[in-house]
Image (cartoon, rainbow, N blue to C red; front, side, top):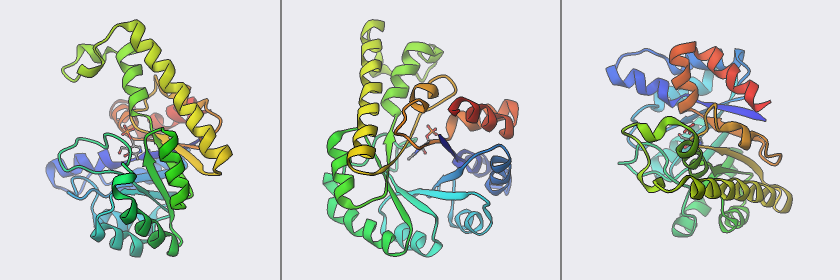
Length: 260
Ligand code: PXP
């Protein structure tokens, strides 16, 4: 199982003081040493963490392949087509959200997405779509002609955390999941089964490469890492959070061990 490390949060820390450290580029050398397979960054429309300067420096210097998450904003699409990352992962984006809350609503942006996918493919940039684990979204992704899909694991992660972590004792508990443990447990089993079935459909039936990510951490990752049809996981928050205490190299090697 390949590990893509999302290093946006390193740039979040830099932007908190608007200085030049910590430098996200430095993290990539450590990630490589620790056994990461890929770096993931998100060039958001509001540039709240990674900016164009980071993208250019990272692409010029990274010893690991670089996957850039982006919306279908025309300026960002133009910029990335010139910057030529190894892969772009198209994600939905709302200005007010804290993080990418769900997968793409493919139907509502189908025509624009179709032209963006062709635009990137014509420049030999791999394209992935960040989608919810549904059969319809997988079928539409295949029709759009992408090589990769990334399944949003946020629902699974929220259910897992509500059942097994101390999340419910924090001010950030998830209100929608205030339900009995029995129902949470049923929903978690169903959510995991759904991710497995969708991964299998995408890989075996449609020949898509399957990645997954969002909300994965050291407690909940193993169930997802055991799904044979998933090739790669992209993980950010939990790795960078652990690195505050252990250092980045250990945080990544700990995660990589779990993926084995
Ligand atoms: N994959 C995609 C497409 C994402 O948008 C994100 C969040 O930026 C991640 C993976 C990583 O999520 P997390 O930070 O919760 O591990």
